[in-house]
Image 1 (cartoon, rainbow, N blue to C red):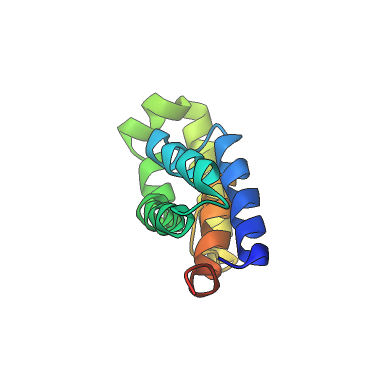
Image 2: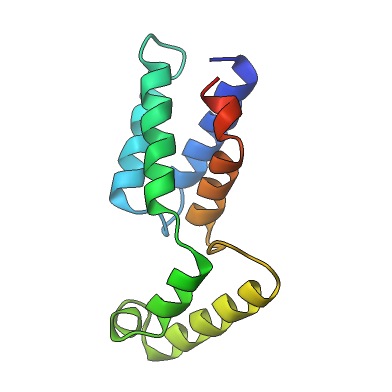
Length: 119
């Protein structure tokens, strides 16, 4: 893996590890990549991290639907869920494709460079 690709993925993996909005599976993939960075299994772990990012990123429509559901209210609390839903509607109207929480933003950045990272 090229140094610039490694550096970028290390930065994004650290962002994922340091955000509360990142799920456990994605954190595990980020940690496994960081442990492998610069080693023989680096590319394998990078591909796993990218695959996990593809699986876990939330579309803006998914965010809106979740925040508007009973499950969303249970996770966020009723008032916060309404705020999150409204925020999702606003970013969708502005053209967003994905949720803009820190974890999804890191995933989106990774996926935007997927071809460079796996070359």
